[in-house]
Length: 197
Image (cartoon, rainbow, N blue to C red):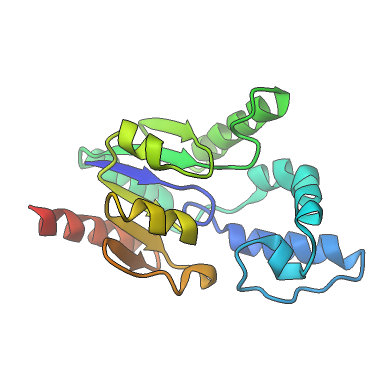
């Protein structure tokens, strides 16, 4: 099987980092956290999208180095690869599609982070917000994703395993399967595969 993995919110705990860094960053301006269940920082802190962009412009490279890998992500992904599956990382990481110095730096930081965390993969795709064309081009059979928008879009094409987060609790439907951790993820992948045979 060709298995696609998102990074932010799936391989790492981006939510924890965003809340901690956002609380510290916006507290300097007297802005408290108002909705820790929101998907975007602008909704978490009640700020503008410009404020959110400024936050990421200042801190995205720190994020790329500091964000913590999820428990058992490396072991499970490497086990899937050892089983004969092909692993494709498909990420819409901020800045990663730019053809400039910042884009190159981000792509390298992502690869370094994967290596540091012992995550093996066959290919990495730095994607725009929509991942559909990349999924079709790489013939992905199952995608692991956390973004509500992406889950809904991709599930019209292939099965999607939704990595459970507070901001995607209301996402459900045909071809959408939910997991809470990587050990559960491993079994769910084979359960979906066996159901299709």
